[in-house]
Amino acid sequence: MPTAPAAPLSAPAAPAETPPPVRSLRPCGFFQRRWPVALILAAFPGVALPMAAAVLYSADNLLLWTYVWLFGMTHFVVTFALYARSENLRYFASSPGNRLVFFLVPVTLFVTFDLYHALRVGAVFPLIGVFVLAAVRLADFNHFNRQSFGVLQLFKARTGVKTAPATKRVENLYFLSLTGLLYVTFLAGGRCPLIQPGGALTVAPFAGDSYFPALLPLSAVQVVWAGWAVVATGLFGAVLAGLWKAAGAHNGFGAAVAYVLVQTAAALMAAVYFPLYLAALAVHYVEYHVLMAPRCFRAALDPASRLDRVYGAVRSQPVAFYLLVLAVAGLVTLGARAGMGMMGHDPGDAGRSFEYLALIAVFDGLFVFHYFVEMFVWRFGNAHFRRELSGLYFAAGK
Figure 1: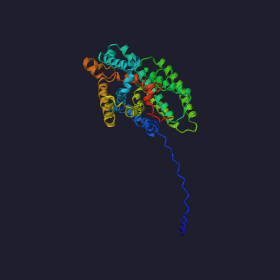
Figure 2: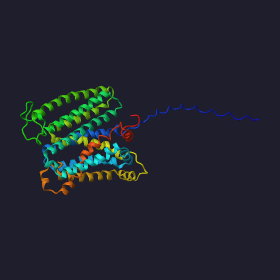
Figure 3: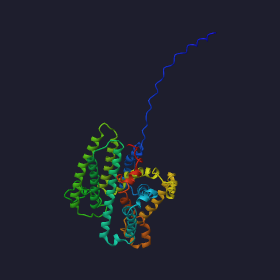
Figure 4: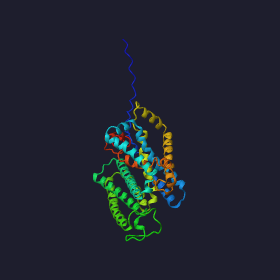
């Protein structure tokens, strides 16, 4: 039998190439991205400082009211988006305590402040007016600095480094001290008491009228303001030292330090001259919009809920969503401008009808409603809000 021809020698196989290592891309949460942090920090030089210059050197009220509308009033109005989700409404109505906090108290605030303005209670009973104004301002300053404290915790969390609980307590006390400085300046008539002439602790007297009548004697507010300043200075150093210690080999704490410096500068410029408080709130307004964006556009909706379907249709068009917010905020701004936001302290109110005052004051309670509700809806310790906020700002495991 003929033998089969020998098989041809095959060429040596080429050595197998080692595949390149696959880099695992870790998911990046909303607040772990650069732009939200950059936008918040940029609000100070980009918005706060120009508005401060406008307050000091410009007589253009239209510019100031436009700023109030676009930044301030929209930040109040967007809070209502929390009520546009069925899951939140079910939680708000799930217990007597929740119904009190999220329904009864807000409605009471709106009605009370509307009647307060419409009946001109502050003008007819000046002592009550002073008490209400002082209480609202304290709630305002506390809200401003409590939010700063909370946002600082987000800046720290994005580094992935856990700090000691004592560090968090010191930071909380520091922002409370800024609230104290702002409030004493308010009680002193709107200018830092240490630059008002005629006091034992006056360090650099500046002539000129105060922004409004002082509510306490100059000698008293000078001592209190100086005491708060000493406490705030010590706490400021402790906060920066704590951030430096926590940073170690990590470089992510630079943004947290920058945030502390920015909000400190904002609070201090208002603690020196209270009219600058409007400009000082720029970072507060911008960061609130930044942080509300995921809650408005990324929070889970229930397709079986008609409310959620409607809300989902609105939020699917971000331009339409914000146009709606701007429109409602515009109405609030017009009402505030007509009433001058003084809750019945405008002497010109005397010649206006009850119906007119009730109409322009219908949203007077919006500010206090915002201060009150915000104390509860950002609590990560609450199981409902922790579930809602989970995954919105940081990737899983962060």
